[in-house]
Image (tube, rainbow, N blue to C red; front, side, top):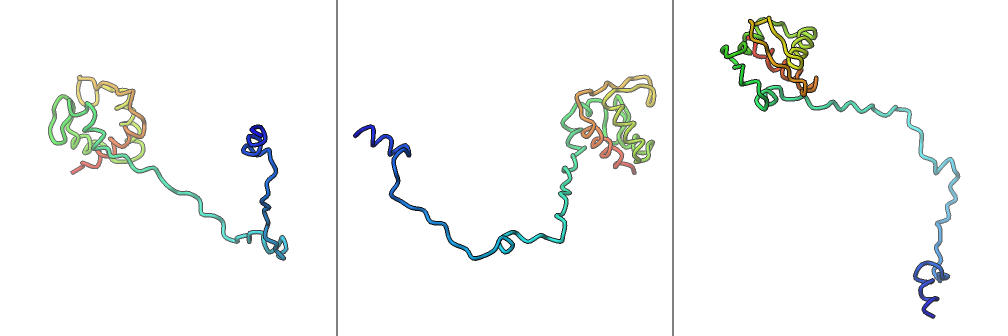
Length: 133
C-alpha cells in the first residue's frame, strides 16, 4: 500500500481527472496570427552618452590639468582653443590620452592611460573641446 501511494504521488498512478480541450470550429487560417504589413521597428536604443566631466573628475587628470589655467599640463580651455571639435581631432586626442604624448605643449610628457576605454577617453575629449570660449 505504501508503494502504491508513492507511485500515485509521483504520477505513476491513474488520475481520475480528465482534461478537456475546448473544441473550436475555426479553421487553421482563422486561428493563425494575421501577417502584418508593417515591418517591426528596429531597436535603435543608443548607449547613453558618457559624462566626460565625471570621468575626468574621477581620474587623475586634475593632478596635471585645470579648466582655465596651466598647471603641469595645459588648461582644458587652451586645448579647446587649439583643436577644432572634429572627428580627426577627437581621435587624435583620444589616442594621446590613452597612449600618452609629448611635445605639443612643452617638454613635460603626458603619461598614458592604457586602462581607459576608447569610449571613455572620447567622452573626456568631447567635454574638453566643449570648453572652447
